[in-house]
Length: 112
Length: 112
Picture 1 (cartoon, helix red, strand yellow):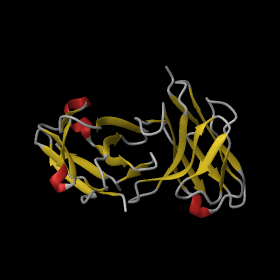
Picture 2: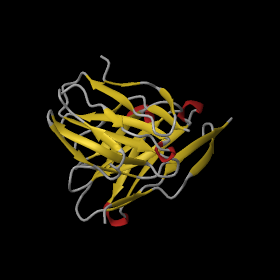
Picture 3: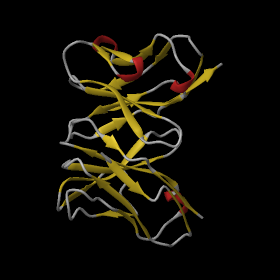
Picture 4: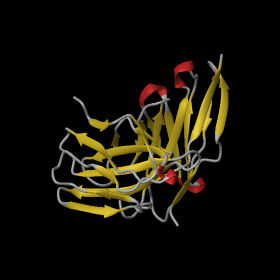
């Protein structure tokens, strides 16, 4: 079955520290993968996507993600977080019917 | 550029009442969809449309109806609201299936 797993429900990081949010997927072929961010009370905004090619993908707001086929992972990283990064982050893939399959989300909390 | 516009932002309904959540996009996107977001469950697809006059069910369609008479509009109807429909609802549009989705700001619905 096609699925996306985000193992961490909450992550707390100090401002200025590095960040890695985990995303694992189950899919039979090379997936199309996305990371979206949802700020409080807002809709979802695309951070970055992976369709093919270079496995290290750069996104907006200084985020990047690396596609690792051998580990079925697409982890999101940022070298230094800012208080404005506090939000919920969703990993998603497009399935064989062109539907988005979503992870449950990881809520990022920033400590001052 | 408005993108995807959802109305209302907040709504409280009594059990058994009906209402329509409005969604409009001005990007000439063919594909539109409705999701509900519940804590710890990510986003679940309710209904979607691949173009004007064509709609189909998603993962959780029961209790909801949709129509797509124009490319721009994709309203979601609750015929007889139930407390289980308390959720945050998001409309999204995509140029074509399998491409990046743009989201509205969401509608927070409470059924009492």
